Length: 357
Ligand SMILES: Nc1ncnc2c1ncn2[C@@H]1O[C@H](COP(=O)(O)OP(=O)(O)OP(=O)(O)O)[C@@H](O)[C@H]1O
View 1: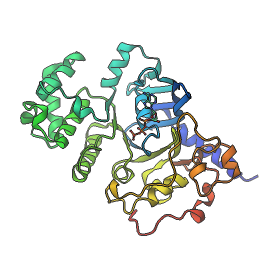
View 2 (view 1 turned 90 degrees about the vertical axis):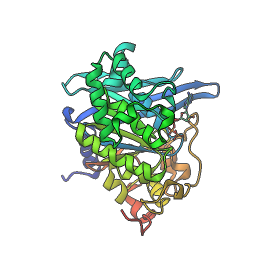
View 3 (view 1 turned 180 degrees about the vertical axis):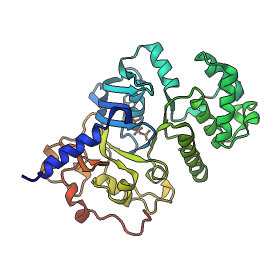
View 4 (view 1 turned 120 degrees about the vertical axis):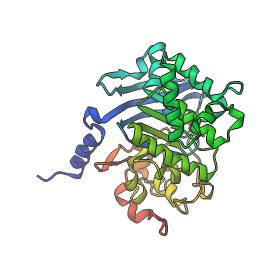
């Protein structure tokens, strides 16, 4: 008997979600975040399964309020009280130790957060202390983690130079003396000074102009290659992330709607929401401001629709979509989608022509 499409899908999904352990650096299973509110339970991340591969740049895209920051916080067990994080996040260190990030006590968690998985939070640039020069910021971080300060400062200088900054001048400067783009680069250097394996960035370029955004994107790519880093880059700017990421995950209503290699996601997305995002983009080189809004509103985390969470906005929705939640299915070995109708999408929602892909 030949393989039924369902069997093929199941086999390919296994291959996509279970690569050999040494390829995977962070493994998320049923990762959920919820808040108890007066009007009910707010589920702001819902049963997310994803493997982050060693050395990759994973872009996470989604509209405002889709759960991107919650995903970043959950990865580092940093969800604020009274949020509740469930599921597992397993970190596989280079020396083959596995750590359950959500079970770590305060001390080891703090160590993991800077020394293994570092994070540049949204708006973190404003957290520089205005009364301290940047050298003091680096020294403070190195001392807090018992690192050799002299060696750490040498590494800081190298990182600043990698980011095309004049290291000595920058170390002697105060936050108000640098432009936004320069401060963002210092922040990236600071987050890498303790030699982490993974860098998680939440909207790191949102406050910068287009030229500076593009320049930081190409610097990040160079840093990944030089230091063998794994990066998670979170943004609502789909055109921007296509320039950087190896793989893109599209979050819709607090879970992944589609995950795949960037080329496949751009040339042949299979989820109606990803298609809507791409069709709303006049050109992948255009600034985000030129993107048209997508009709309809993002779901309320207290009342996510049953079935497919996108069905209320989806032009392809059928009664099945209202009742049955679509499972993640494999499109190729490097591309998965959660949609009942992905096989029909090429006819139903063609990609806009004229966009350079
Ligand atoms: N402390 C909190 N208590 C309750 N709900 C929260 C809290 N923080 C965030 N949320 C809710 O969680 C949901 C997901 O928020 P999140 O910040 O992850 O979205 P996002 O995709 O990062 O959006 P943006 O691009 O606007 O930053 C939103 O509905 C938000 O209102």
